[in-house]
Image 1: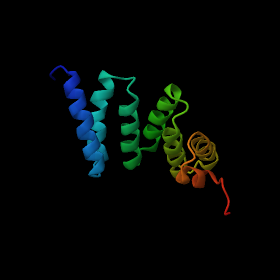
Image 2: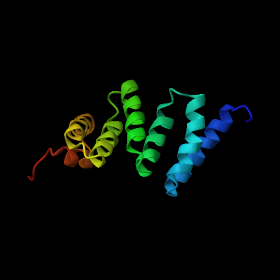
Image 3: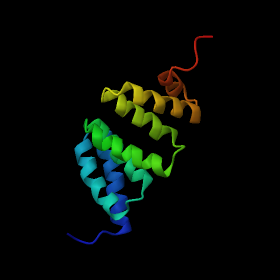
Length: 122
């Protein structure tokens, strides 16, 4: 296998974004595995791969990547929200609730607030 360059990683990351948009999460994961092997600390690559895992219903892998992102960026509201969705889909509603609430507290986007059960009708 040829040596990876920074350009190769960027190309693969962008291609993975396109594959995910085209509903090919498994193809996206394959590309992102190589990017993450070269740059294990990349938050953006981990988030994208976690989304791909979620879309492919590989919930344990999605959870692991979202957790890794949150270890490095504990105030990442999107990662909390996406982890909550992953836990919810895995029938772990009690754990999901905590992350929905953290997402809403960090960023009061309507979808986060609604998922957290905050904000009644006015």
